[in-house]
Length: 454
Length: 176
Image: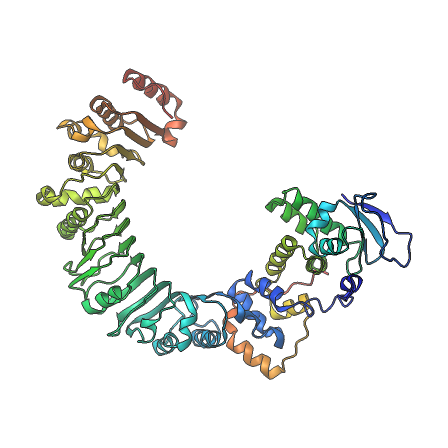
């Protein structure tokens, strides 16, 4: 074919049939740019389009409905059937699959789900994200699913009591996010986590721990761990214990109500930790405080630590146990977020600072609450933490209001931390709007020897 | 912007010219309008460039029978922006604002024919956006697709895929 023919070859005089002559790969490209819902709907266009969308690689099936009679006859069953057909037909690269069904009008048949997860074609799936409410029915992960080697990233948000089979092994799983699940017993959790032999990231969000007594697990490949705990239910008995040995863990995050005793052991590699606990009604505070002491003890090798106001306040209920807290000899950087209910927090901050002899940087990102102006004086002056005198060289105070307690604290640090090189103070919006106060504070700063601040 | 020159020739054949004498490339639209463009612009159009390469640069007048003189300036404008490195979200938004559905489709075919990857990707997104959340009938009309399902087959498919039709935009009159 000569070049002239090549240029002539397309005849698109029939503009009406716009898409008819285009090759599949062009249509796939357009489909890949659409939502899964729109892409699936194209299967009704014509016979040519019926299966085109199934050649894609990423699918996000989601039904959000709050109407009990949306006029659709059991959409979830149809959707699960469709995913079956997709798995069967797909013969391309590994696929990423998201199935989410929420809403009061949505009921998921556990048998159907079990059937889908047992599908032998599940081995084609590399990333799987399932969010379903199974109405707390006990649900058993199918045996074939539990040994599926293709999973790289697994997100199971299943509102149910979860049982796992006797043999479970996700041999390639790097990221596991398990949320809303109530573990049926120690054995289930133990086997699930032990079966993730190369896991690097574990996220446990809002799980039910009622049936857990004591689980002890070693996860040597784990690098990142995030745990969030729900508001305690009435039957929460605060006696659950989980001990995690994670020698390669780099990063740890914990938030919510620490109803479970989490012991982290052997954290030789830990770099940063972020603790944002919340306070529960007084009756159970001693439990949470004891759990917190335990948790912090496990983190004593951390280099960078962030504590929320409530986290510090919880410590106040651990008064008797506070001395059990070891020193954080590796801690270089501490961030403390004072919230709106700061009460005794400062006293415990000072107590905690005595446990951090090598601290180089202290950051207060949210300023102080004006309420603590009242007891501004006494908590500071008792004694100066060692790190102030020896190694603290950076102090960063954001959202600075210029209130008395803040200024007192600043003064205290300036007087007692001779090695401070960098001091960053960022004014709050309130302060920036108040020119008179700004001038006043500028003068006070100058009298303390501080010339420039933001 | 490309210089638009009315072609004198009725039956246009590939004219042999000495490459050193003319630095520009002439693109001839389906309705015989000649557009003179810089060789760098031609490089953006893989089909044109491979044509030039295969003739060792001797041929610099290239007939594009499938592209009308209405569409070709848009293609050239996009390519000019592309080589200037000035394809921004703002430019693309302005560019697409000027185009009706029919023009988008014609440009898409032109981009496919000329093999201009960036323009093709961009217009794919435009098409995907324009048929998002639309009814099956709308999309059929948009693409000019003839429904070859029997009514029974279609009804069965519609029932199975009912969940995909929640929240579909009501059909408005086609733009053109």
